[in-house]
Image (cartoon, rainbow, N blue to C red; front, top):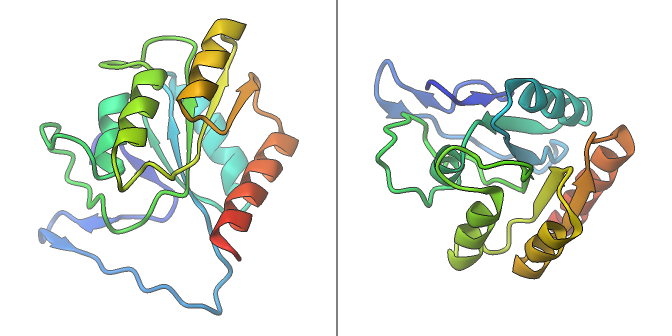
Length: 168
């Protein structure tokens, strides 16, 4: 499972080639699943840490192709070994300062909005981009564009947004 990290532990038992079923219990508090997409390791880990402090399950990837695989809409060429359909992604937090390997954050957003399975997943950009890039992403369907660095208050607001959307 190179390139993938999840705070929920293994999603697929690759040693046996079996998918692991995840049971959801209504009595257990909702834990949003956040997908962090950033080409810089330090920012992936920083964002992961901030969301985990708010009881989120966090998966990190370093490029748009891996993000598409986690979302279940990739081309399958990466051979990630991850069971992409075990856990619904509730929020995508993506960098847009630079080109992610293979595609920009904007291109990832456009692909997500074209897919019936991911068109309603909120996408938030964390960036230092200029106003034109911000406008482009918002027009394409991003729910927010937060200037770096991501603050604790930003994370709280995003977790509340996802929790409200899920009705929990």
